[in-house]
Image: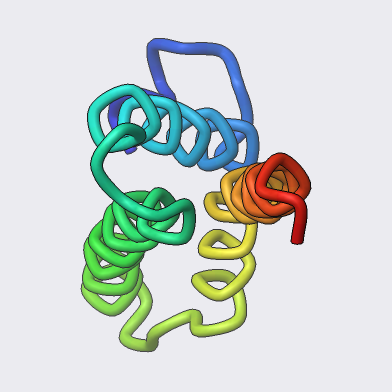
Length: 98
């Protein structure tokens, strides 16, 4: 990642920040129109796209795909959005009285 050469953070931290940023953007844009679980879909899509590029780069440089590292990155990217989605769901459910 060329961006990581400029910004002094780890690759794992970068994934966490990207996941949260995409989730926050989805929250701001989609919140009033869709149910809560729709909010996590954009961060999942972005993480899959990032990992497709990473897997391609890994294959080109080493001749193999590093599947476990990609799975780790997908989890890092989506963990906070997933936790926030569950929290929002439970909050909405409590407000509705269910």
